[in-house]
Length: 568
Image (cartoon, rainbow, N blue to C red; front, side, top):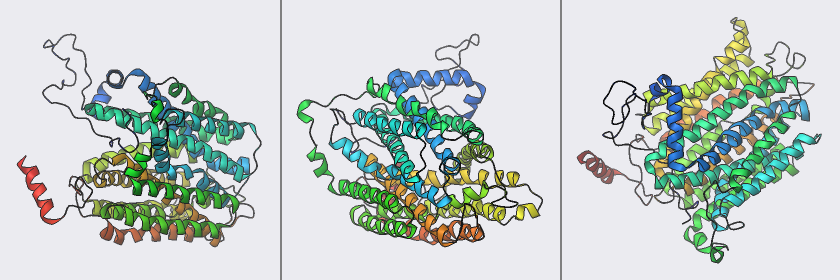
């Protein structure tokens, strides 16, 4: 039977029976000490991977294939190693060099192009609603993945083969590529979450495999994007990732997604599904209309940054009001906080990226980072510090309350941004510290770790607030809303850059860049700290926040639950 967007459960962690768990390094049912074969434990730790790297990988893959089959494993490998891992990372890292070397546009135009391109991530909720309500060519997932992959592959072919000089055309084509990634990611995620429900003890294996593929793909992409961008036209990288965009068509077309065709009598629009969740469906579709409208405004008013910002802020007000009207109170408050956290850390990357990589003529005495350093070295270091952030979080912060986690991470985020201010004002040079050393051990190291501190409690908090039975629905809806927060942040940042008089092309003018970064990355994010005490519950990550219906647990009910938990 179909388990779609509205019925699939959230990702669950695997559990094992300690009595049946083989000890690391000891084969099951073998009491001898000779010819002992290492068996990878279900609850493997970091030491298992270090001490037995090849055997642990072999056992891990055997377990993955035994639980979900080699076909579905191939499907996930293509999706999360090639499509979301390598291809999406290349698109993210290539943007700066593509804007400067290929399109020849300034920082605000580059950031506007990025805002348009990222729009599909804000409509994930609507993508899920449409795919669940209407089986395209008899399939709820496969046909949508293949259709979006055709669009994405065609867009990359056009970008690779044509001498595009228009930022607007490039933005539309990048929109189609991101539509493929967002659609395939959501629907593959829906399918593996469905399979994890049937085999809950293997949940951790699935999640680890997906995350591992993505991390490996991201590292591989980071290693070659910078050098290629330095020595060649970045446009050549579109030829490289175009086969990856098309690669998802093969396993999906061969049925590796393990999706059955919908019977002929159920091939139409599922009106019952839409009537069952009217508020969720309405919110998802309205949010998609607002997000797509933002993209349309950006395209037709590409240089009118004030009107772009006004539209984005108007959409913010509308969606925020609807969230409080249609979502459970506590869920709406926390989601509004995380949305504001995205918005108030105003994105001025167009100005910053251009300053860090500007030539000596544009910024005399500036860092003048090449793409190998700015894209490759910092990304590789950032990946490892991100993992260190996970370890620190699990070791020292996992017992904190949500409220404390969010205001502390806000302060750390501000501290990380302070390194940019110091470099822009050239204090590091006055102290005798070269730019590359200061940046590498500043924002490049602290930033990714802090992002993990922000990301992990947000995921845990959301998982504890969603009503039972609507986990995946709410996840996609909230993810789309928070992604739209990133778009709004970009629109505000684009206008702020223009208002500050920052010019990233000859004649360059970065006179007010320090104040721009100071306000957008140090002052505005601090507003989140008092909001933390108003919108975030003062509960630990192990506490139960809502009941099965999504109603908030307070007072005597909470005490009764704690007493019951202790009794058991």
